[in-house]
Amino acid sequence: MIDKIFLFRMANSWKTAPTCANLQDSLVDNSDPCSGHEQRRDWAMKECSVLRGTSTDNPFNPCIEVIDPTQLDMYYKECLFDACK
Image 1 (cartoon, rainbow, N blue to C red):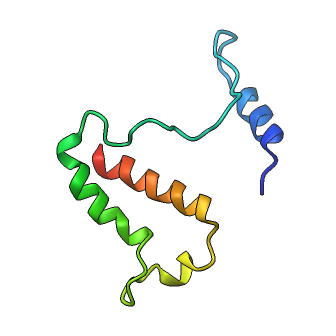
Image 2 (image 1 turned 90 degrees about the vertical axis):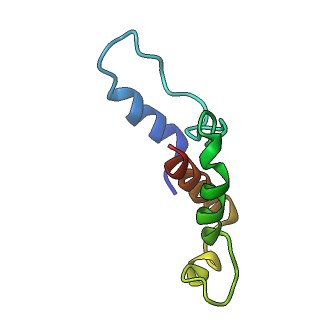
Image 3 (image 1 turned 180 degrees about the vertical axis):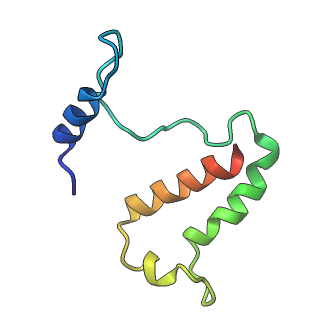
């Protein structure tokens, strides 16, 4: 796993102007992934649920079993962002 301090230093070293803020806190966008696209929310949740599903025919089952649940939640949220936008 990448050290968070190293990640922040590396990201901040790429700033192109001194007025750019330093990266400090979480890299995860905690806003509602479907904000402004509510009409796509139900479809996105249905399609992305395969990343969390445990049905016997889910092709992601071997991965779901070994991925850290926090990481799995991040993948699910990223899927929602992509599907809603």
